[in-house]
Length: 428
Image (cartoon, rainbow, N blue to C red):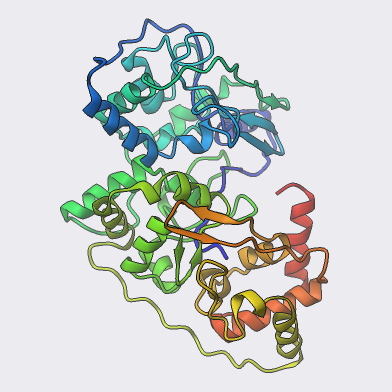
């Protein structure tokens, strides 16, 4: 069950053409970069191994591979697909190939792409999170550039986005930037320590966590008055990761550090896009940086984790849900909801079980979860989906039983299950 989601930006459909042209800015996962037109690359010295290794680390912290490397393709050659109601988008080639990649770019032009969303020949859509990378110092940009320019060139052409009108009108990004591009993001926690400040940079800039965990306005812009309070834009929603939100879900700093380092904690495992974040990025962080990120997310003075509420777990729906749980869930998650190490997460205290919004719990029950292999540190077996085996009522009763027994949360209705099931049929 997913305590922390990482969905792509997917703002609501907009009524006016002008609004649509701007909104597509938050949808296009062209997370990278235009081609050609560069003034000539200024490559770092070939023997500058320290700079290149630093850039390798920073590229991991920025989670660049999630958008620029497919499971079967060449590293950094793009092709990562994003389907949306507005069309299909693809990550771009950021290898040093001079025809298809960024091989003709200078370090200055690379920095402009990260900071301003401007390449030698186009404006980028803000789903390439320059809205967060904007506060990256030039030194870090140059290190990432040095690393990328030392990677193997891949002669792989970008796939052009297949967009519907008016979302293929890139000029709208210029106006979007005038309205919404900010130098700094607002803070969701309070702190002044050096560790908190380092964590702020890792979270807000490199990790660009706000891009998915912050609600969006009508034009797809982040609502910075509600930073990190959660946003359900994809199948697995991005939850509230403010200090109050984490406290409500029972998180502690040690648990959060374990989750970021391994993908698994007592509150659940990373699923959805958050699996990619852990797999490609946070599990490779230095321990000090993990600690800094948790300090920022929870604040210099963390709130105590809230205890599970007591719920009167009786009634026909509870009995029906218990029978379903024993029949299809207990073999992996345990009769007592305690889970099994490296097999299935615990249900007791799981963030998706105890959350106010049961959407993620319902979605995972219907869809299942692919096997999760977090390097050598942790793994979870595949969980089958039950969309074809359980009715809306059976899923609702099952979720109600788990939430009442191990989550201290409210009842789930058939209508809620039907809504989530129908969303899957619409491609959400």
